[in-house]
Length: 278
Image (cartoon, rainbow, N blue to C red; front, side, top):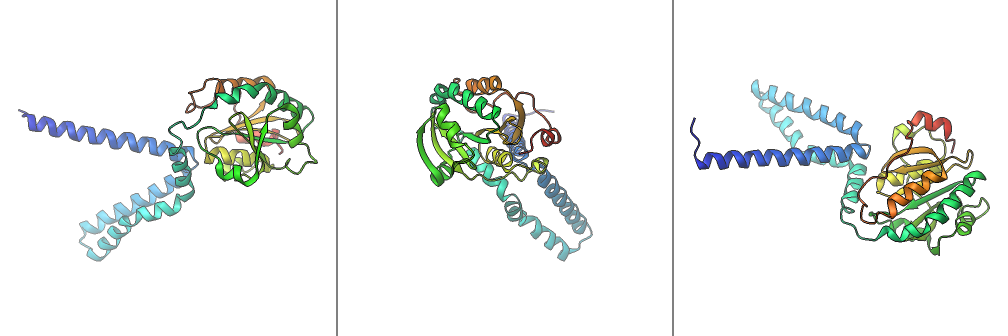
């Protein structure tokens, strides 16, 4: 079989199109899977496959009215997907908005010692805490709800989360090495895997890490256990050394914002439920 230059160009162009579609589809599916859309995605895929099969059968049997209805149904599937995946698409677009770095995280490195000391102090005395570290995704909507501009010290951190203070029930947001907000109300996770977590503090920490790329540290008020949530993944039973190591790798690296923090001793949700009461 002889190929001329036009045939070669045609096949190369077709191969490039297939490669682009495959890569885009792969990363889109991975992104949806990371934002807890896996179950919905499988369900919608099965329904669409059934509709397409029914459309092909009706067309083969020349059932014109049914063929037209099924074809119209396939055409409006984009609207259905947009409605069904509205929360996941919002999270996905938020993540896409943080692809390009827009701030320097290295200023957070100077407060690692204070954070480690404060977290150890609060964990020992079972003072509940929820600390959110802003990364690439801006948390302006949460910051403006309870705005502060305060230097980070051990005494300030423990004072804010002391049980008798007005701000102790909410979250603290750290931006640029300073406390940007405190007493912030965060969205709770809807992931059924973490439904067993009884404390709203931990569910809120997981929720904000699902919606944004923020790194979240949590201390249980009942057990004093230190936990972390990063991009929806929950890790518990951390030590002060673990926390300082995580923060050092995260903030002193400077430009490695898009990389995930290395997880330490990840535990499945059932074990988290046993160890984390709140």
